[in-house]
Length: 135
Image (cartoon, rainbow, N blue to C red; front, side, top):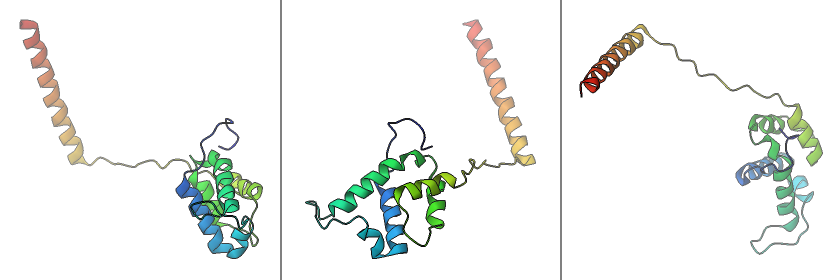
């Protein structure tokens, strides 16, 4: 998680765009006005917003393997827009979900087919071994 190595990968662009989009949808102009410098890059992006997105992507990079923490933080946003340190704290406090185990219960028919396949493979292996020794 975020307290790992110094050189961690940043969040993917699509993730940080989703975070900023969700925040803007939740807080309206208050969110983007926190970052706007009213100076634009050649692609038309505001320099301040682009810098904020880059910084957030880097600082939240420790959650790349735990997107559920980011999702939980976005689901429990406070009344006022959080700062980056506040959002990081929200992500750290979010419960980490253990990987979901795939449950597969074999039916009697599955077991029967598996036994038949195993017997067939074993017969073929033995036949190949006998034929290989004769050569």
